[in-house]
Image (cartoon, rainbow, N blue to C red; front, side):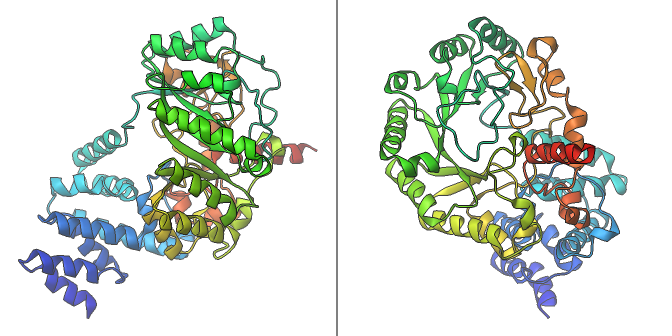
Length: 484
């Protein structure tokens, strides 16, 4: 009855009636309902097609994600609710492409639903519309370009740090490296990056502000037309405040270390004063927060209060992940795979609820297993911020997280400590990023848990379970266990 009524409404001349018809399809789970929703994406009325888009994402919340490394889904992965839902949507897409006239507006509007793009492209190819499939792929590639930077490279000028966070994934990274990148090597690295069209250096480590040549780094980057994105625990001395201003610093990602802040009121005061100074210097900023097994409302409540005092609108967050050969404390996300209603779901929904009630936007910077959350919890989280559950490190065919170490050697990602050749040994930015292609592909193909091989969302690149760096360190530990 609901489906028939929706059909009748969608054929009406009145925009409001067609919109009401789309809303009727919200809980109507069938390929035909998906077909009608997708067809409504081509409606002449923006209100109607935007409503159809929103309903599709409500029905399939993971469609808000940009998938990575898409693979065919075996029959064994279609039996779960995620598999059934994906198959239902795919049949709806097929009906639209094979039975309806091609509509250029429809293809462009599909770009607003990142998760359907691979399926649309595959169906266009299957029905002989290769030119449209190529056009869709080109449009998707253009739309995913970062609005903030043209090209960015990470640099760890030091792995020294003024903190000893229990959850730090980079414990032990300093072994085998000089304490600081020399001025000579700094000049070489920045000149190489500038020649490759890099316009932003993202400083990581270690704590970049402990680098002995920090002011010179900022000046040298500026003289080469590059700005700096600084990730810092913001416990640097007052003497550095004059350097952390625009245009030298494009963005400050202020990592809030709850362990130090809770233990020292003076540290909390230094952190806040440094952020205030950076704001006065015109620097764009956000707070970065790592959730651990011990995190709870009191902990993130202090961060939310701080954000309000400083008028910061967004908090970047991630779950502490396994790194540094198991030497750090980390959230046991693997135990949460398939465990809906457990600790992970309670943690994330509680954090999102408190942030939403305070008017703050959240941005997830590290993946987590989607199967740990019920659909309604995913919807609530997606409605309040940006979220991803598949690493984008290799989406362009080369590493987006290419990292230059203190000795000019490279890591494919600042969390994957596989030392590669010096940056100067590569002929181009892309060449350097492709050096670890097989390693990254192997990690992306690696299921986070056995249950992942029975999940359609894993095969379609929506979920990897955890950061690829955790996959890497897990594989190292398992290899050692096999050799023992």
